[in-house]
Length: 353
Ligand SMILES: NC(=O)c1ccc[n+]([C@@H]2O[C@H](COP(=O)([O-])OP(=O)(O)OC[C@H]3O[C@@H](n4cnc5c(N)ncnc54)[C@H](OP(=O)(O)O)[C@@H]3O)[C@@H](O)[C@H]2O)c1
Image (cartoon, rainbow, N blue to C red; front, side, top):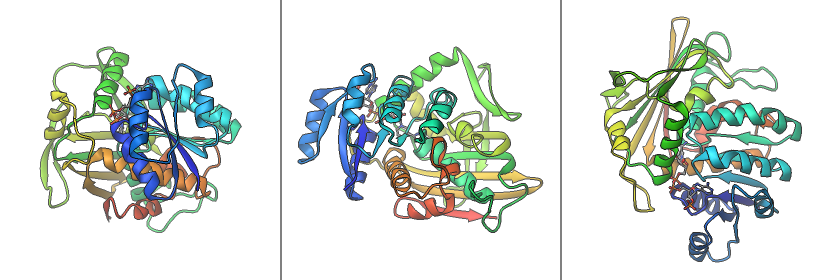
């Protein structure tokens, strides 16, 4: 049985990841900075080992991941935890996967660790969750998979392989009651932006003055959701993951008003189980007058992040990847269509040419 360390194991998302690892036959190694919370979680999972570790103490992280085959980081804000945990993974030479939905932290991971991870032959996958990872898999599947190793492409690819003029990712959430971790991450990201907003346009990430409200536009989701008001310029980590491996000029993300309002209300979700929130992630890719669409729907954006992260770890540990080391995103390192098929118990995916 392979041991997979989970940093932030007792958080809302960490708990889903621990349960998913167990369900799939891995031995989760419970890690976190708070001994009491860690022990309480360990008491719910007799037989699982737990170790206290802190992002500010590299030796504690080294001791914590000892014997693990991989580490999943669920402790956010990731501006504080991603660097230290990645560095511990590089020292231990084990793959690292996180669920970070912080654009700046995601960028930092690519910028700071691409070279060290490549040199160490260690795979590092940031944003391997609902935001960032799922959108990237859908975009890649819509464009047509490119096997990075051979250059082969699946049937039905459009236009220039691995390229698109425009990518649009619309998040059709019925509501969004954020976790404390999401709210804290939002505060960190806002601070780092210093009153600016961020978008991906003209082939690059761009910061611009935050003047006025975000624009409201109408988005036609596939049935049963249908036409909904969404906020344009609601920028999510897909603006980091998608252009990390696809040549694309514009990546735009949208959020249903109901969800954006829920997030702004900032009332954290309290219970630790699944919520009734439903989601549809609707991806439209345009290239040279051709349009492709790929859509995934399901329930509970936090719960579904667990099978996404665990499927990633499973594929990395069994060599089902296009890359052997470096910082990478879901769409680049995995066979996107096959990955999405593997999640059929958690996601309903449809593709429309
Ligand atoms: N990309 C996505 O779609 C996606 C999906 C799910 C979650 N996330 C992100 O993942 C993060 C966690 O979410 P959550 O839902 O699990 O929130 P949560 O229930 O509030 O849990 C946050 C966890 O992070 C730990 N933590 C925070 N700062 C830490 C630090 N400096 N060192 C060590 N541990 C630290 C907390 O431990 P303490 O109790 O000790 O503070 C707790 O275990 C958030 O940033 C969220 O946005 C992203």
